[in-house]
Length: 608
Image (cartoon, rainbow, N blue to C red; front, side, top):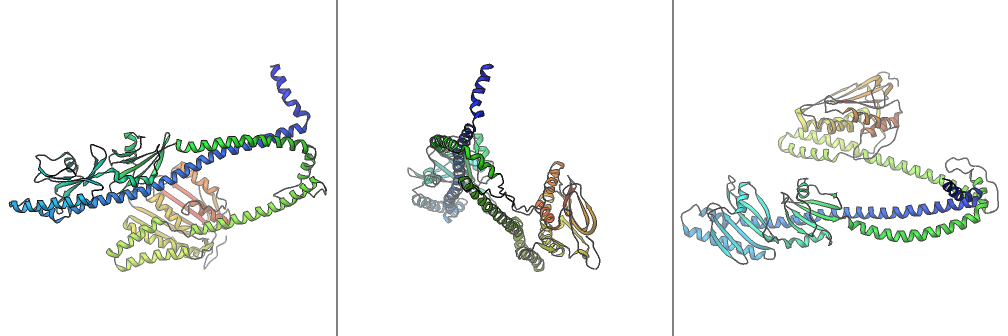
């Protein structure tokens, strides 16, 4: 214990007696630690940048490669269709039902000629063609080694599977593994009766040039998997388990990626065959470059640390004496407050530094003011841009509905829907004022509801109750329609049965809410929007109310739509904390949004 105490005192003793030693130690630490941190961050940022670049590049490559592969499979499918629609095939199928052998022989010869022409025209990737007719049991075979017709007493295995599972087409590997068979059923047009099947045998090598768009390296693997999770074709040696492939195949048609252990797995769907394109990239591909950067960083960091220690020692030794005076003169400087301590008037280097720091503080203050103004303008522009948006899904559904109405509804009904959509566009693209009248907001909301009522018709019950004396009250633009749209998306959309939505505008002296902004006191206008949707759970409702209580006039512009937080924030920003938005909800019962704003009454007095 005494030995440790002596060592401790021996280490601290030089720093207790000399401010110069303390300054040397501090400067060394301050110089070295940032260099180490920057080096570590550089390595990590380099790895993250490479990871982001790798993910972005491969997601894009997977998208385009899937499109090109889909086009190739579509071309192969077109080859099969060219046989299916060939008049000679229809003639032969019809001749099977006749007794004349001469007509059958002639049609049969025509089919052979058509298959031969197709085979030789696509010889660079087609290795064989088969045609099986179920009624006669005849199998036409055309490849490089044979051209024959056989009569079979049983249905061949691939076609038997195709017929039993009632599939239109399927893809399977050849026994050699270097080719695949695209098999499609032949059905009678009138009643979908299965007449037979046709097979196109294709070399996998025809897809290699397209798969090269993925830039597979030696340690990377590209896989094409079938709809049932079977690996049909593989470039590279890395394998995925059958469970992993099946999970990816069943994961949907959207492109994506995921990290599985020490690998990144990218995937996308190849239409129209519903195959899965999978690419496996080991994590080492990213780490190798990061390690090279780390080695360079360690060498540079070591040299920089040594130089920093040397410079710190020299500077500390030479500047220890005047540093105290400089610190005293800096006590009066403040980069935030306008008032500064008067300059000491020194003429030496310390005085020069003092003057420069004083001038710099003024420039920084001006810069802070400029940055604040720029950020404020940016937030205002973002809010206006957000206000000018119409939900693209709502627009798409509306346009599709109008297209249907043009064929099924009266012109007047179609015109009313088009007029409502036009009025909505006119309202949002017009030069946006900060405030609109309550009448204008209600008209915009009603145009939205005209479209929604046309979409959902008898399922939606909508009621509007308004005290018309309050219609000239002012309200932030785009306040009501986003809340009604929010009710459809989060409340009614998941509710089975009939939907009910009501809006009530009334004069109120006090509007109280259990949460959100608390008590919204003062005479004014209360707007209540209620629905019978699924409601909000207690925990989620608490979180929403907490967010609304923290709005405090902030302009929130995150996301693609105007949310409750944005509405609450703008209400408080325009009218103060006495006004705002409150929410009340119960699971299985519905949700009620209460908005409290100042009022302007026509034909009477409304004190606020």
